[in-house]
Length: 410
Image (cartoon, rainbow, N blue to C red; front, side, top):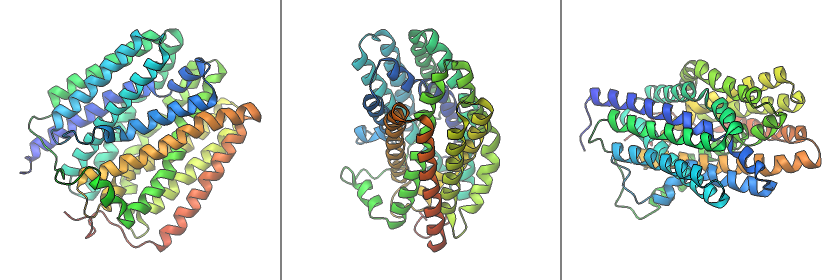
């Protein structure tokens, strides 16, 4: 398969930025409000946690359900995934009295988001060959994502508390807009390399046999368990104040800070990825920032200025994670092609986010009912501290992992 010309790659990257940006408006108008919707149905902690678990799992590894579909055709895959998401959210707005149907449709939306995300990330990994430039490209994706999603939680909260029907219809319209822009902006004819000759799941067996991939996966999993608290435990904590706009401002600050910090942090993370301590040093930094954030949140007792300080700390960790996580997997892909390495990253992300979402939905509510929400935040801070310490210790023993290691070379 011939490489596309540089002009086509530049156009593709611009289209991917538009795709991720517009889609993020819909995603983050939906995501923080979902646990509030479930709790409003008087679902118990176990039910809330289970639905959040499934949504997070499918949002990041829903592609596994359709893994035999040809993901190599870039424009059709991206367009159809977004159009399908728009249709399912629209139908959910029409059948709100049937709660099981609404949940099933939203889980279908998560699958569509997963297919879109894995394709976008694979395009960057495939067509941007220099490791430093690739990290910068992923960082730009995160900047645009957060720039466009900054108002998403505020928009979602205000619309939901006024009219759940309007909330869902607006989300559907944004998904539809993203599908239309993607169909127009992505160059025609681009294809990704895949290993279709292997049996189903062959990429997963190869990834599991890669020692460096396994170690990277464990560290990434634990960091995403911590990260997922932002959209599981945090909405349940702050929206309970009865001031949705005020609560939404925390998510707005988070997104705005990521926009400001992502590019400079991405450059710093890209330099560290070539050092001996590599990705594990960065994973430890992520966990340490998040642990500090949870400790501050627990001590805040819903005092807004203190909560804002906690969000700042959390965002610093989130920004590092967003800048280096994709490159960490691509750098140790070994015999895997880029699409399979990104699938491995998405699968690990799904597991981490799902376990974390279950914790933030079920354990956080149970802890709040039995003791106090602050107890949950302190427990999460202890977990983050342990992860940071383990990552730091492992980084000192680990051999160099650069973006162009022999194992990672094509």
